[in-house]
Length: 114
Length: 116
Image (cartoon, rainbow over all chains, first blue to last red; front, top):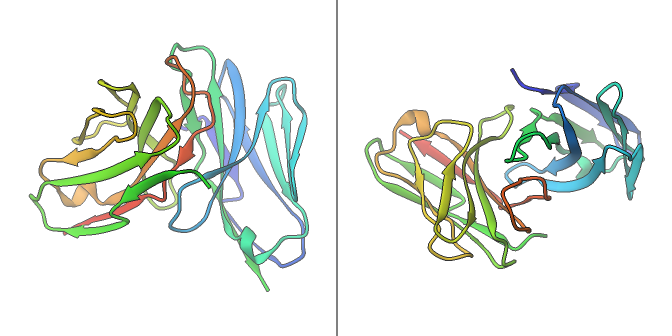
């Protein structure tokens, strides 16, 4: 069972609008959470990384939040641009195993229309 | 943009052929990874390496094999391709010593493989 669930599966918004993507996880014990952006036909690129003690982190128009108590994270995109069209993947790592493995969500496919 | 490269970007091949997917990085990273990704699905780790002459299988069972003779290269080989191997293969690398995978991983552009 996938321990990282993302919603919505897909989202269409108009250019200039804001949107919020959700990530719920059950990975424990938690180490960190990353949001990646994957353009079509490309590999994922890291946007933000958040550790247990961090609630909010921004990277330009991207703002990630983390609630470690409820095991939820969100990625807010402000003033969307056409170039924001991509899949956004939530990745959680654990600290319990010697491997520190990564758990990947299936991504939210965002399409920004002009 | 990360300095990690994959060739070929696209490959269409017949059943039974041997193929090698190339991955190289110029960042001097010790750790490298191979993932398999189907459309709309999560990435699955199939192989990883902590350094030269170190390779291990990932979470997803795969008939492919890997080698790590040089730090910068991490090729993946399928001895006999089958239609079930059709997928996207992503290579990644990360900095740092030790066996944990918690550092940020830098991904290559991927190879889309179609086996007929």
